[in-house]
Amino acid sequence: MDDNKILFVDLDGTLIEEDLSNLAFINYFKKYPFKCIFYLVLLPFKGKAFLKEKISANFHVPFNELKFNITALEYIKFVKNRHRVVYLISGSHQHLVNQIHDHLKIFFESFGTKDNFNMVGINKVNFIKNNLNIYDFQYLGNSTKDIPIWRFCKKILYTNADQRLQKVILTSDLEKEEIKASFKFQ
Image 1 (cartoon, one colour):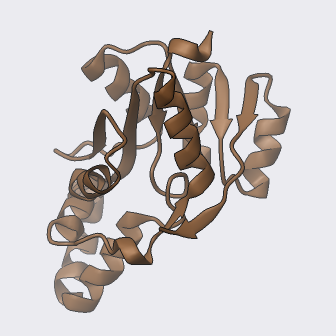
Image 2: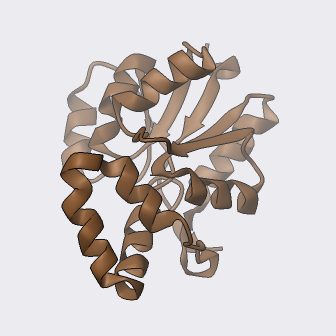
């Protein structure tokens, strides 16, 4: 039964319409184009987590420019009212995820990319299992990168899925639940 399962919620494209890593990258590129190009050259050697750390270090999330998924926020509040634990988990850098966590004040804890560990796809499942010792949970996401997580959860809890992902979801033999996306400035 799902009533007592822990819920993990993705950030970019799920909870907010934007991708914070992309916003941080654009901001960094505008301020430091040569440094940015240098980090892009290092990307194949250092990895995405390294790049995300560099571009996010001094970026302040522009909350007034973000569109939040109101129905996802309502769903999170509904889940919390049922005394379930809700975590925020994202491929964006931990520095950015912490800002969202502190702004919304609705998550038990939050996790993002850090320490050369890119928190996307199967890495999220491995982190949840190996670092948090949680093996039975739900996950709300919106991306094809979330498919391995849903397979582990055995249920697809999704929002803001594009047509290609919707086709994959509809043909899946897993249980499905859609949280209709409704993005608005907060």
